[in-house]
Length: 187
Image 1 (cartoon, rainbow, N blue to C red):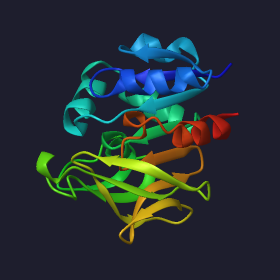
Image 2: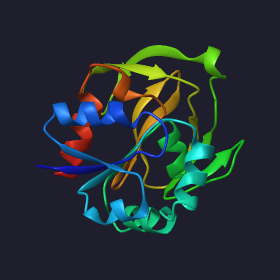
Image 3: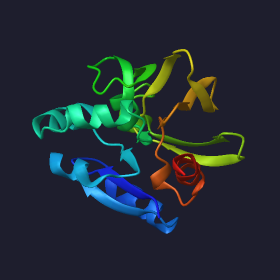
């Protein structure tokens, strides 16, 4: 059974836990630095507020360990704010973990009123529903970054080695495609 540590300091972590549990993963919440020592097979950084999440990860003493785990190869799924947390460069805000060579623009589709739903292909696995809430956009991709999904010509899901990032919220739909893809990558 795949053991997934879900960052649970802020954001949509419960929804990720439910989606992954339905697929047979064992999930636990990462709320303090000691929780990172529980040897997860993979990590999830959920959607939420990236500035708050970045501050809490630092204040709770998790930053260096979390970043080190990702750089050492622990698979990670970052969604919405999680994409911002992983990005090497962030327009309109500070970078945080900076483990993925992408640049993102915060709130690229507008604030809360700019939230929308779409459908697009994902990783050659067919079309899936996409939920965008104050979503970032990948404005540039570094060498080795693979595009998994595109909406209106903009990459909205990318992969770089052990890291998968989406601008949308797969945990807010009933479609298991993104979480299945992630667990398959972990295995």
